[in-house]
Image (tube, rainbow, N blue to C red; front, top):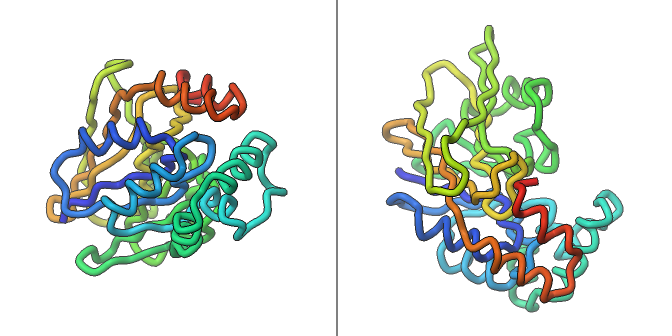
Length: 251
């Protein structure tokens, strides 16, 4: 089975469409949460996701935008965008988002693999450093976990004796680019496909990944998109300028 992994689209329709247009052949799309928040196209992203996607787990911004959690734990920029998103979502889209399942999610045909937004131990946990990753790696119910939330493409791994952090190093700044690696037997993984709509690793291009369960290969992908149009939408919605400018620097 070939699974297209999208995460943290954050209302960025232009980035999402670029990823879908460039994606390798796949059998299903699995979304790791945070469809909305920050970007100015929440309804369009939700509707496109509903048409194209098969499986979802919820993210913290999905919960905030639908009133499942309050905004007290959000920074001012995130809170303002979540509140704005809540006012923009159609009733139907809001109810659909509110009903998204909590991870971890396991699916038939993919033994030993699970999907979550933050961490397999806590759907809202940020796994940023190797220290953060050790407990989720060792205590996860399965060997391979795909997660989002941090907006940082890469993986953490451990064979019980040695642990590793991997961040892909790309050769260009504005072209389509892929990096592929094979999952190793006896190794546990936390793998983040990166953020479609708001990368935070210094690379402005949309990030996603493909997992081939038969070959046990993972492909990290970066795809340029119409950044100016995404920024113009944010400005036209009178959202904070910072939400537009940060897209250009991948922060």
